[in-house]
Length: 552
Ligand SMILES: Cc1cc2nc3c(=O)[nH]c(=O)nc-3n(C[C@H](O)[C@H](O)[C@H](O)COP(=O)(O)OP(=O)(O)OC[C@H]3O[C@@H](n4cnc5c(N)ncnc54)[C@H](O)[C@@H]3O)c2cc1C
Image (tube, rainbow, N blue to C red; front, top):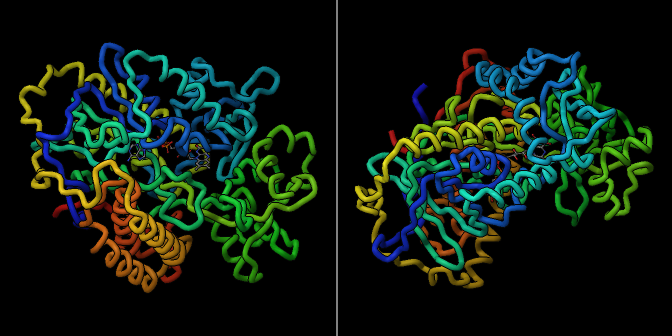
């Protein structure tokens, strides 16, 4: 299928004068320091230099907030074939079976490595404790600190990265754009408050920037998830695919005034039940797997039940579970709920769905290679073929480990085999955006207050538009209306020259919103997380990817 062409408003978000911007050289540049970026960094040959750049502090990433766990076959009654079958079943015809096999078979080794690195997984009788989550036929989800798996894994990985001599960690460093020269990736243009804009020239570059949940009003994602990697890769000429697939998590705490905390899938895995405002347990009305149906089904069922009962949320009921189980397995959720006066042993938890995981992304092959030479990518920013049209719970930390390792190893091998070629480069990217900087605001300075206010307002509007029209259920009329609205905003925001991260994030969000809307319009069927009320059936003829390109 030929790609949908969506021209970005500009190739680089900022103008720059290569003679005035500082230049830095490294063997491998990694953009993003979640589970994927750090696993990649640790796979690079210690004789090489690695710059690991993250736009926030190391402890801010989707990875850190992961709760439920990481999937892997450890139980003797389970088998790789079961994990593969569950993943493929959830993916609704769009998984790449070879990729699924690879990832599933590597899971025990990758989780074992984490343990060697010092991550402490919860145990039962000296063995890794395993729980079950929606869509899994067996108990195969390893967890840590009860329900704070990401925090523990990232503690261990961050410690390793900090002590790895080859890894130079740059926190609070925003990557604005990938640099290309003669059709190849040559590093990135980054910005931080101390040095302003800097060219980081790299022999090999790895993109590990995570997801896009911040496009939506209701989301489990932290503030870093603004789709920057998707957007910068697209502007640099990378192919993206499957952008219509955003996974909505069914159970996000819904209390006015609270941030949207995830209530882990494991709460249902351990026996939690969903009830509507009348107390009725409704999931068996929608699916035989009831609360353990895949996320897309549970999210849609909740939405329908909310409409049926005309109530703003449904309720998760853990009150019938043994107190010891709730105390041991859900300490984090218990603590969060307690802040709002809710006692899990006595009270029902108000929940509704929220945007959770970006399934679509930069197309990569089984070696984490993108379509742009010298650029590798892994983790949530990619579409590897593992998740198809719907991600199985707890498969994404695993994907980050498996593909992070591959990206790091391959970038390392490629950089090792390469002489220092920087001398041969003109130290200027090959695009017309290279002109003296005329930033609208003083470079590196605080933006004028009015600019911040306008962006906040625009972000709220974009979030609502995406939630209402490109959300859990879509239709042609809403999608067309969202297309026109987002295109209108992008017409004046896209070409604007910002000198602040909020502005660049807004430009990235608008571009990625356009990509998602175009793909959602093009897929005239319902499949996985993409539910069209005007095309409710899955059409076997459309069991293929939708590709997106910046140029014909
Ligand atoms: C609340 C929550 C619970 C979850 N629970 C689970 C679970 O139990 N199991 C599971 O498998 N998955 C879970 N997930 C999903 C999983 O956490 C993510 O898919 C996974 O961690 C993504 O890893 P990543 O390394 O690709 O991205 P991230 O961990 O999000 O890391 C992205 C990195 O890129 C950086 N970055 C982004 N843009 C830029 C830029 N412009 N410049 C520089 N740096 C940038 C960020 O600062 C960050 O360091 C959960 C997600 C959330 C939000």
